[in-house]
Amino acid sequence: MLLRYYYDEKLAQASYMVGCQATGEALVIDPMRNIQPYLETAAKEGFTITGAVETHIHADFVSGSRELAHHCGSTLYLSDEGDADWKYQQLSDWKVELLKDGSVFHIGKIKFEVIHTPGHTPESLSFLLTDTGGKADEPMGIFTGDFIFVGDIGRPDLLEKAAQAKGSSKKGAADMFQSIQKSKQLPDFLQIWPGHGAGSACGKSLGAIPTTTVGYEKRFNWAFKENKQDSFTAALLEGQPEPPHYFSRMKKVNKEGACLLKDLPEIYLFTSYQELDHILSNEGQVIDTRPADEFSRGHIPGTINIPLNKGFANWAGWLVDYGKPLYILGHAAELEEIKTALYSIGADRFTALGDIESLLKTAPQLEGYTNVTPSEMEKKVADGEVHVLDVRTEAEWKEGHIKGAQHIMLGDLPQHIDEVEQDKPIMVQCGSGVRSAIAASILQANGITDINNQLGGYSRWVNDTKTPAHS
Image (cartoon, rainbow, N blue to C red; front, side):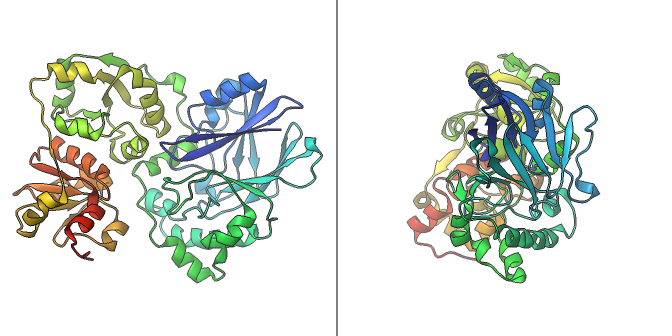
């Protein structure tokens, strides 16, 4: 048997290839939209990808199942659990096997047993793997998707917060409690192969190691220690982070099926400032992907800054208007990385890449903002000379903030620009200085120019100024 692990750092998303070496068949569990890594593994190892499996209808990335079905003729193994609102649609063009609790299917001599594990979503499935070709008569491990993570479990509130399914959070939490009770019957030796790692918005405290075991989670995962449903529900729902805006779109896309990548238009490259000026003059959305310190020293007015790093896809999903064409400023060598990241979150209206060096050289003017330390701003904040805008999450804000600060979470800032006080200079603050830099670019793109980005965030502010937290 072959088992390969793939990890998209920008989405903290894991997928897996399982292959039967006896028959040369393989399948991919929770494939990402960019299927090239799976095709390369299959070619190298001599496998044919005959199946694509989904643990549930994903909210945080575009599934690559239909891409695999198109390229390889793979069968789609999809959940048939849950209510009518969360059934897969538009499947007539594909080979499909619908799965329920207790279903069994094989890839060569590898057996997969299906367990319905609702909670994160009503249709969520987990898959027990038994290598019968290796003479095993017990499962080796379980693919849990967004059910069990390392040190945490999947959040049950996304349908309510992202898909407006009223009342579904408590129902999901109750379902999750029952799923956890069911999983306690699994043998301790089972390996757990989860769908996400640390940094994913599908849970609140995911561990950073890639795998775990049922026995380890029984001993150390908080969810396995809560034996009363009421306290379990309260603990699970408390402090869940705000879901990115694009999550609601992903649910619909993955339920109905994303456009195949081959059908998307080619990205064109441009170096003309006149073209960029035309885009900006017509309210086009333009993202500069340089590091924040470079952007702060000089950027083209009207552009916003989302650095091309691990957080790029997440913050693009928060901030991009999916209804408008999207233009990116970067380097031609980064095009494939940018495309992969944007397409992974369904930002398919990515239209053109502007060469940032050429555009900066020919731009008639640049603007920037100031990076400041707490010691530089402490007196100005205390004297009311500066307006403090805190762009952290609600949970972070409640733990402590500067007295008199205004709170607008970064992902919501574009919709609340008119609420920002503009009669004095602004100091933008987050947890470390990363999110506040993005916020500074959004403010400037909307004509608010007297901006200071506080380096080191709130934790540095408290440490340097010795100011007690205000909550």
